[in-house]
Length: 177
Image (cartoon, rainbow, N blue to C red; front, side):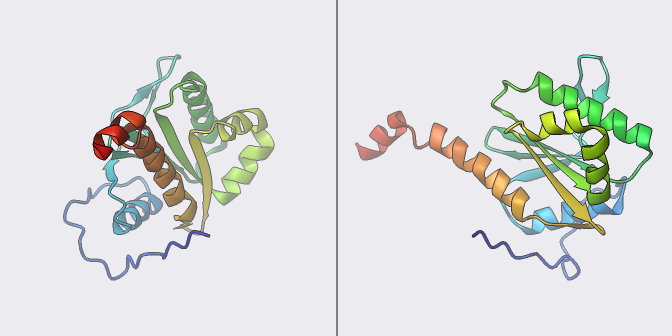
């Protein structure tokens, strides 16, 4: 069982490189807590947009980077039903288009109440998104995100990269020699 302690953001003082504008308190909290875990992954706020087949732009809240891996992070709070439907439709389309891309990774952090609503109303899209091995869907409640699943997910990506690119037969033979 992976035990990951929750960092103490209340007593943290290193906010020197933090952007000041956030769309929500949960985004600010996510950035602050993520940086306290010291994973070795860099975090960037609102990276370049992903363009969908319908020529619409999707700008994730964050992108996590390590080695040549990039993980898009989208935090979905409470908005209008129409906004949520558009957001899920864009994500569904992106996930469909990137289904064969082994380097595409996404984390969706969804307000728990919205997640239950999605599962009832957008069942086909949410199921398709959930079934993609390169997408992690997790939820938050009362402005609190559990990082346990998220950290495990990015560590798995990191370990896969190391196994394929560092610990492969060619490099292993070099190390042995």
